[in-house]
Image (tube, rainbow, N blue to C red; front, side, top):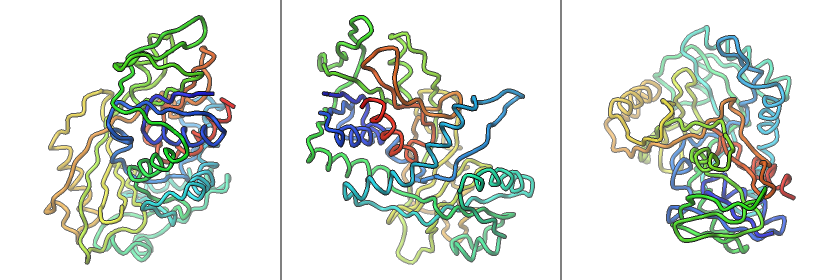
Length: 363
């Protein structure tokens, strides 16, 4: 089939890989002049394979059905192997490590709650290790001078530069026949009964045998005219990228501060600081006080780097968060329209297994 993928973020590009691998003719439609220009451009960079969780409750109500929670957890359990297989198959070269992430906690109650959740993780085969502050610093010397209660090491998690990964993969896919149509904005649909006949763009109509909606936070708006109500809201997050110097002692592991929604990853010659989820909004303004607060949190963990004194680049993005924190992958009421969206803050982590699942459904 000829398949049009709407969206050139990491989800769309990885979906193109799996569909092309099955022998389909694939075109990725992207409104920017390059892939990975929005949520995939400068995220936290962490590969969080350990983020399987038991059924969660909020205000006495289930956040997800048991089936949706099991589906989400199964994706996390399968994705590490899919990621490794993809980069080996395509020979994708970029900065990444799979030697672990270290989650830090600043009070005993939060640490104990996290360790309780780790019992569930361990039952599914997720390795973890509870560490004292001294053991955390021994494992990650960049934390010397920081004050915290304890940490949990997830040795099979990792970090990686999603921007470089997505762009390198896109270039390799072009060599395998995948087409990328840039500077093309999808504005609507033309339908015929229960099928999509064409997508309408600012460059005219585009016709294919099947269509994949992978537009992240913008998926819900485009699906609405079709009568498809996607439970996705755009939640704004921020990232800060700081150049490193040759003699800096910087984290080699991914560092997480779940209490404050802050995450730190080394990406070659840069340190990426990311986090904070704010109100549902499509606005991409960046409040200076929010960045100042993030820099203060970073200085608290890495006092020897004096990060606030350094030049830095700031970015805002929209995380496509589904109502139950599980991505939406698969069929729709239209026989040739498929979804791969709603990954929230886990698009980078879940992209390989999401693309693989999508391709299996279409095949």
